[in-house]
Image (cartoon, rainbow, N blue to C red; front, side, top):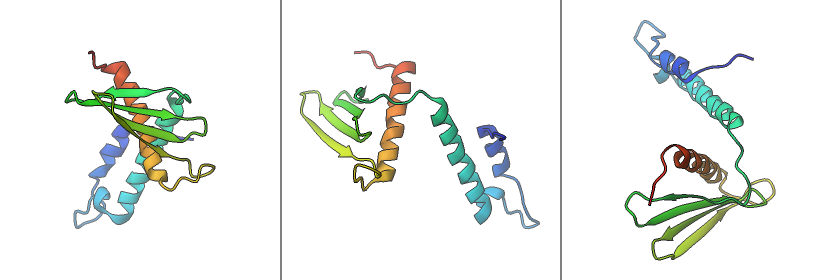
Length: 130
């Protein structure tokens, strides 16, 4: 199986595909191919990254000093997101897996899963010190 890179996708975006100057990125099918290639890259990156452990908090302080965001994946792989103020008040919401948990927001849960990865990576590479 061959692989594709971000730079390869970027390089073909501006390819002119006809005599009228239509670019691959703006062509109906070209746009779909580019989107599929980008989605494939996300899948490959996720497969190569460390899995998200269950029952571990991932937190990030906000930029304005008003609180922090906390996410956790529970034992059912549901994702709980909590916004916590500096006073300790919080609101937690749970987004369940569609397969076993009856989740109704699979795209939101997927985005939160990606947010866990982002917070973990950001805390490692760019920690916010108190």
